[in-house]
Length: 109
Image 1: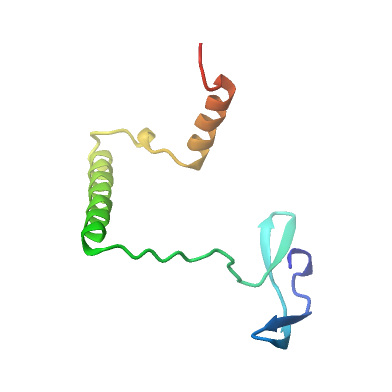
Image 2: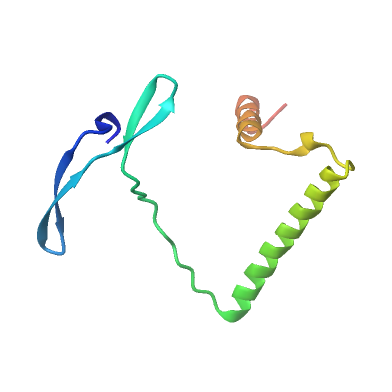
C-alpha cells in the first residue's frame, strides 16, 4: 500500500469460503516533506470486549472517574498558575526517561 499511492490495486481474497475480487486505490498521504505514502484506511487492531460483573464494573468505572478527577484538578492548578506547565509529560519525556533508565541499568550504583 505504502508504495502504491494513487495507483489502482487488484486483490483476490477468500472470505466465507468464497473468492472475492477487490479493486482499491490507496489515498496519497504526506508522511514527510519529501515522502508520500499510500493508505486505505484499514485498521487491524483488535477490539477486546471485557464483561465484568456489576460489582467489578462499578469498581473499574469509579477508579477511572477518580483518575479523571485528579487530571482535571491538575489542569486547573496549571491554568490558575499554581502549578507549572512544565509538569506536563508527553511521549518525548517518556522516551527520554526510558532511555535514561536503560543507560543506568536495573541496579544503579
